Image 1 (tube, rainbow, N blue to C red):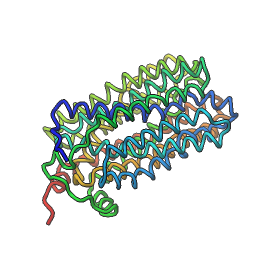
Image 2 (cartoon, rainbow, N blue to C red):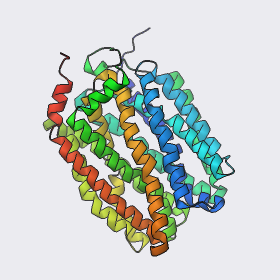
Image 3 (cartoon, helix red, strand yellow):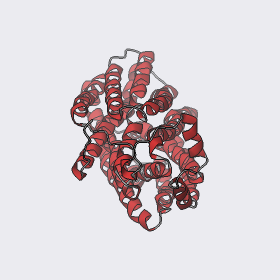
Image 4 (tube, rainbow, N blue to C red):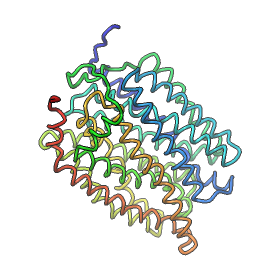
Length: 425
């Protein structure tokens, strides 16, 4: 096999292509959020059923299957696993638009979760293998832009297409770019050697339980797992229900909400995500603990703005209050992944990502949207349409809890990184 020289340009191209694939992943995952009011009206569903559709049904399979797929990715071609997964979730997203009842739509959404389980862990590992620990947060933050770009496309295109051509057409059109990206990846994506940036060379991947024990025995890693999961519960709950909140509580149309949220989360959030990576790398070079402290501080500062936004009496004031929370909504992503891949051995990276995503998503993606939906159903008889806003405001308490874990985890981070880089006894 010919050895590939991973130049600066090739590294940048690889990160860019993986980011576009992650964007397609997030578009297909979150397109349903802007379409929930249309789906609710068309199929006569409750908020709890909608929460199941956007959360638990998708999240359980997405989180669970990520582990066996990542286990394979640490042993076989990460490129082929990414392409196969990309093709599958694009097909299943298209199938969502063909669903004629709730059960069919639920099954199709499960299929999307199965496909998307195989793209992120191998992508994280490939990026970590190309960049040294001190420079890792920035490229991983670039990759995290897929969240913001995906939401931008899902909200702005999904809202406009749904208002003009219906929610089924919106889902089918939004699925098409994934097929093109699969072809491009087949011909141009290169898989770096495992451990390339760590000068450790290719090493046999350890069994699942060895990786699990390694992660759980590391104090800062435990805080990272808990903190990121709590933040994701809040984040997924907000992303799934924000469109419905503005449509239901403040009387906006899907097109209006899609455009506004695309700008706030897509562009504003993208700036915040990139800023997180840059600041973490810069401040982390002086004191590595800032990689976690920064996330905790930003989360605590943003919490009151979220509460005021969800309880606002006008759409305009709600948008103003929610501007800061939407900008920093994915602030945790780059620093979290950078520290994850710095704290584990190179041969564990795909599996460690899958374990993190499993814990994050089984609770965050699986429970977050469902929890908001259930609280909304319980509060609406007493508070009317504002019940959804109150449900979202209550979720902010969970975010504060998660931010505290980042502050606590930073205290042992330097010591744990030093231990992870020490040679085996």
